[in-house]
Amino acid sequence: MPDRNWSHLLDVPAFPPERYAKLADRLAALMRTRNDVLLIQAEAVLALEAVATSLARPGMKALNIVTSPYGAWFGDWLKRGGSDVVNLVAEPARPIAIEAVRQQLDEHPDIAMLSLVHAESATGILNPLEDIVRLARERGVLTIVDAVASIGGHALNVDADGIDIAVIGPQKSLAGPAGVSAISVSDRAWAMLQHESAPRNSMLSLLDQKEQWLETGRGALPGTPAPLEFFALDAALERLEAEGIDAVEARHHLAAEATRDALRALGAELWVDDHLASALVTAVKLPADIDRSNFLQTARLDGADIGAAVGPGSDRLVRLNHTGQRASKEAVRSNIKAFAHALEFQGHSGPVEKAFEALDAIYAL
Image: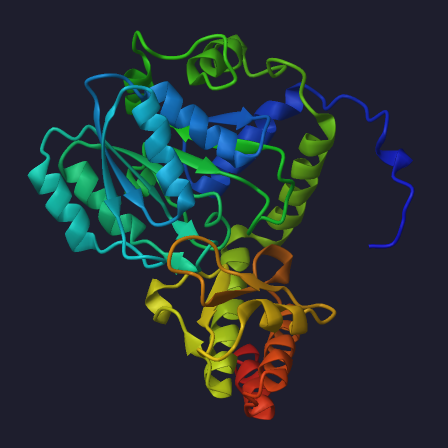
C-alpha cells in the first residue's frame, strides 16, 4: 500500500446515538430474527468470549463442537466458568458429522447447551447447521452459533431455525469493519443468562448490555463507542442493502462454484466435496512435492488472495479467498491465474485455458 496521509480520519464526530438502534435492527434483518440484538464494540472474538463467559457456570453441561481453533477456544471459556464441557472434535480440518452430534446428545441427556461454528474460513468447510440445531431443539438444548464468517455467504435464519444465540461480525462476507460485532439473544437465552455466576461490570457481561442499553431505550451505548467503526458499519450495510442479502449470498455461491470448477479443470485436488464446503473460501490440497511456503510466495500476483489454511490437519492446504467484495468474477479470475502460475512454477502445469473456460461458463449462466 502506498504511503498516504490518514489525518482525515482524526477528529471524527460522535456516531448519532439514535442510530445505534437502527443499526441493530438492520443486523437483525440480515439474521432474520426478532430477537434482541446487542452491538459489541470489539472484534467478534470478544463477542464469542462474552457469550461463553456469561453463560458458563458450575453444574451446566455443554456440548461444544470443535472444527477449528475458534471452537476449541469457546470450550475453554466455558470450562473457565465452571461448566462441564463435552468437546466433540471433528476429524482434522473436516466438518462435523451429524451422526456424531446425535450420538453425543443421546449419551449425555443432561446437556443444556450446544455450541458450533457454522462456516470455517480457516479451512473452507461448512458444518450442517440446520440439522444440528434441529437435533438440539428436539431435546430442549440451548443453541449458540458462531456465524461470524457465514453471515452474508450462507443463509442465516435465526428465528426459523430456532437459534438461541448467534454471533456475527461484518468483516468477512458483509465486507465491513472488523472492530464491531453483534449478538442476537432469544428470550430463552436471556433466562439462562440470569444466574449468580454471571459476570457484571465487565466487557464480557451480556447482562450489563441488557440493563445499560436495551432496558434504557437503546440510546447511547455504554462506554465510549469508536465512531469510525460504526460509520463504517453503517456504510457497509448501505452497500449490502442496496444489493440485497439474497443477492449477496448468491454472489458468494457463484464465486465458489466458478472457483471450484476452474480448479477441477486445472486438475487440483479440492479438500472437501462441494456440499461440505463453505462459500467463503476454497481449500485445495497441494501435491506432496510442493512446498507450501514456496507455492504461496509464487502465488502473490496482483489481485490474488491465496493463503495458508489454519489449524490441525491443514498443513498441506491453501485457501483461495472469495469472501465479501472478492466474491466477483474478476477476483476469482485473479485467484485462478495466480494458482495456475504457482503450479507451473513448481512443475505442475495444467490446462489454464480450460480453467478459464470453466470459470466463464459459470458466470455465463
